[in-house]
Image 1 (tube, rainbow, N blue to C red):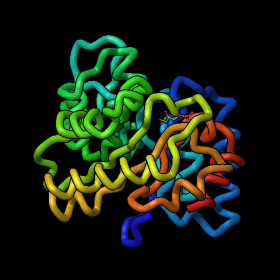
Image 2 (image 1 turned 90 degrees about the vertical axis):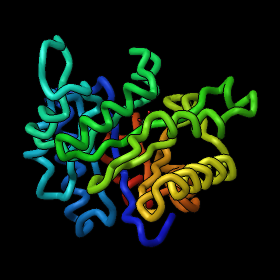
Image 3 (image 1 turned 135 degrees about the vertical axis):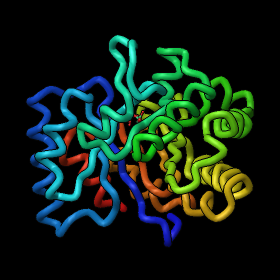
Image 4 (image 1 turned 45 degrees about the horizontal axis):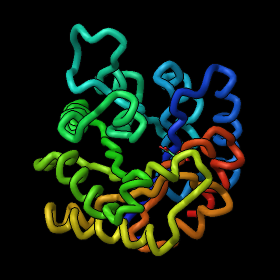
Amino acid sequence: MTAQITPLIAGNWKMNGTTASLGEVQKLAGLLTQGGGPRCTVVICPPATLLERLNELAASSGIVTGGQDCHPAPSGAHTGDISAQMLADAGAQYVIVGHSERRTDHHETDDLVQLKALAVHSAGLVPIICVGETEDQRDAGDALSVVAAQLAGSLPDDWTGHEIVIAYEPVWAIGTGRTPTPAEIAEMHDAIRADLETRFGERGAATRILYGGSMKPSNASQILRIGNVNGGLVGGASLLANDFHAIISAV
Ligand code: 13P
């Protein structure tokens, strides 16, 4: 990991979690407090229905919360959508945008993802902007160029005074138990860092780049040791307190 950057471990609960799941958060908060508090930023992105209650439960242990998506507009006639302002109002500090499941299920384009990232900034929150190639794209040798194009299209040109986080999530590694090799992760994260530095200078050098895709207690320390990996975006393993705590402890 890059020494001067505070690592970030974020749990993306996806469409999982009801009141009963708050027991896991309570357990995680207890484990973190027993250990003297986390040595990195810890974010949980639950379904929006749990945001407020999760904040109340977890704040004292240092856990902060995030949304999983938002609409680009602050309010309006968009049935079923949620705005970044609403997520902020519920206590969120981060919002995931451009997750591959949104890009696939809801046909989200880079342009839309960029508008969402800007909306997140307008609400005073930090976007976690996701990029990543499919298996076919990697097999064709296009992984680097696909991710470069997603970064070019999804990141706003001007985020002066704001922060962004990038999450590299190879689509074929999500929920499959498969991960790229450490060399493949290093190659991609180095390329993303170079891209960010070229485009944004020192701010690009200081931006956190997370790895996501089948991160679990058994591979977390190996992945988090790779240069330019500044944390993780964790799906399935973030649903269980013991597993998520083990990943946080691997930082
Ligand atoms: P898994 O950790 O379940 O593979 O999910 C990764 C992910 O999509 C996080 O956003």
